[in-house]
Length: 70
Image 1 (cartoon, rainbow, N blue to C red):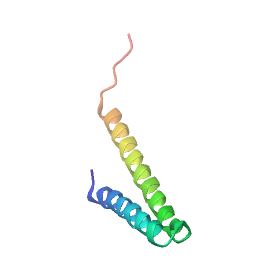
Image 2: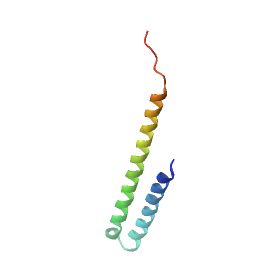
Image 3: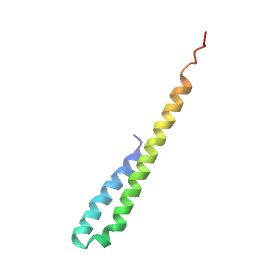
Image 4: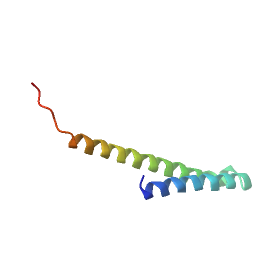
């Protein structure tokens, strides 16, 4: 896992914690944007992870020698 993926996931976890604190102290209305930022970070992390997996599969399939049909 790349350092950028780890930092995105860590930021998502941090924003969930901050959003929960804001929800308890101020209310759900004030914490809504923070939770939306957290969801956006999670989507971005998942997108990058799927893109990386797809690139690995493409590179593995191009490295395998093709067999001739008889």
